[in-house]
Length: 151
Image (cartoon, rainbow, N blue to C red):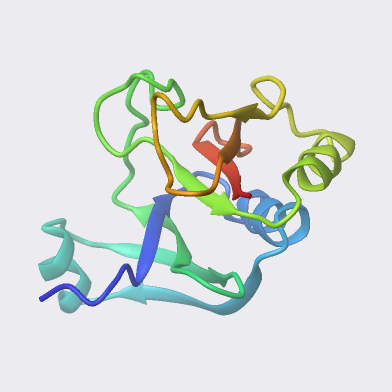
């Protein structure tokens, strides 16, 4: 059955800005960029006349991030996409070793965090012998992201 998560796809409006954020601010590595078009992608997406730019960014472990910018056909951003309680896929969580250092580096780069790093109460969510700490933030297009660590 399922072996694991291969990648997470984000449809973006400004490919250059999003690559800069995920590469330069979050430290992911761009591994491939291409333009896709043709019957195969139309069959996959169920859309006609598809032409899109794609960029794959990878971290040292875990699934890749696939940024996809549709040249055609255009789409529209749903309302409330960057809110924590909007139904559907809600955020990508990035596991880090030193969450305080990474949060400070994000702030220094101009990224606004939702607040301070929080520890998940063991009484609410139990992670065996470790405690989870996390903080939310958004990418330049408002997509919800999370930093987390376990100690």
